[in-house]
Length: 226
Image (tube, rainbow, N blue to C red):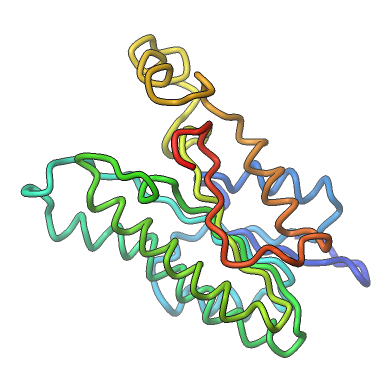
């Protein structure tokens, strides 16, 4: 953590070592933001609330939460897997947003950007639990975005799929012929997107130029979902 300069905006990125955390961190640091990175699992209400409290004034919250999808048919969904997805993705998002909202309301400014998934926008067979959890995230962000818009707080989600990241599409599968064939059959751009594209979109949503976009679930998936 570096000393914050007067007037420099502060961004908090959760679970920075997973999913899109590192790409967004790099971009935000290039922009000159004061970036606070947390690598905790966000497994409890107390952890989320402590993080917000200890981070001070947060201008931008990047709720970057990830959990493998636990693929399987609906009749074989285990309660433990279902609960783990909601405990890792849905509950922490609410805890984080609930905790950061009072300070943003007091200042009448703020940005909340959730890195979610396009999966529930289209649906994926044998991934009902994952789609349900990510769908809950998306529904929450849409509602909160509308609720906070009149207070100059912009809340949006990057609902992505088929983007290079260490949780779902790591480097070691990008040259796999079977996987590449799957991509060509399902993704209109015929490729996996670069993590930098998510970071660029997050940078715009976090910028002071973005004031009229609220409650949006922005699909970033090479046309797989729209």
